[in-house]
Length: 341
Image 1 (cartoon, rainbow, N blue to C red):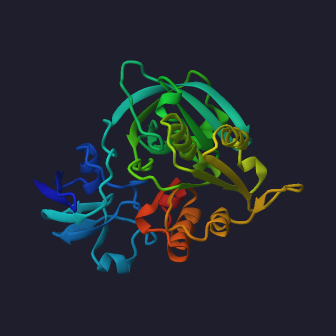
Image 2: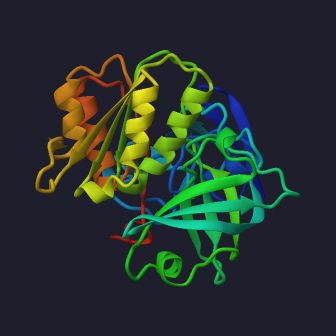
Image 3: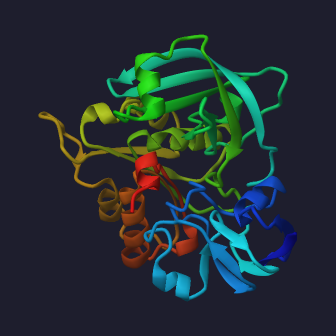
């Protein structure tokens, strides 16, 4: 049994099998819907059910509250149809542009720009045409079938047949413990991708605020590389926050690009500043608000810890006039985040 889903206002239609979610069916058929974690934790895929009935799987209240559910909102990543449905959702041109493929990858190099950050360079299988948009992510498929998601830190043009990933060590983490204790060059891993709707909306001329915390810098770096490569004329300011200076593990890269490319400005922010730190301090999204109290004419791309992303979304919209549909986010939900109550 399959059901017909109509996405409004675009009028796009696709079919969903009874045992799959709306989002997985949309991804399978190249229909561009907004999404992030695919696990009911981030809320990026929140949409309005206009007609029909769905069953909602497990999800976190912060991603979809009981009040929102009562008002007819759903998460497409965990909603399974019980009838044909009409759903109101933002169409994301380009989200389904490239086919999702499974492929082996080989570790070319492992660098440690900080004691708890690994920078992996991966060689892609030459016989599989893996294409992606700057800002998207891949999932590593572990031996037991578990998956771990990481954003590409490079734009497609910048590494031929390779991808760069930034991985923070989460002590006790099944995958990151392996990366930091046993992984070595030439190891083979299996991955699938590309996934995600976090990439530049290039039909806009608005100035851009790039907001990152920790290794949330990875896809932001890819966006910068892409914008520079394509000759974008949109002014960009990058706010990158961490607790200590070591958390801004590629700050020299950001400083160099800002020096060479007049359209980019870089503002590093520390919440627990090291002795001798002469830069900005406090919460990174509050530094944006101090500098740009009126965001009504901007687009914001935010990536990092869910707490930072959620606070930025709320405060930028409520206090700085940012249109809600001009905030694009990729919250780095860990496995612990996904399974929190």
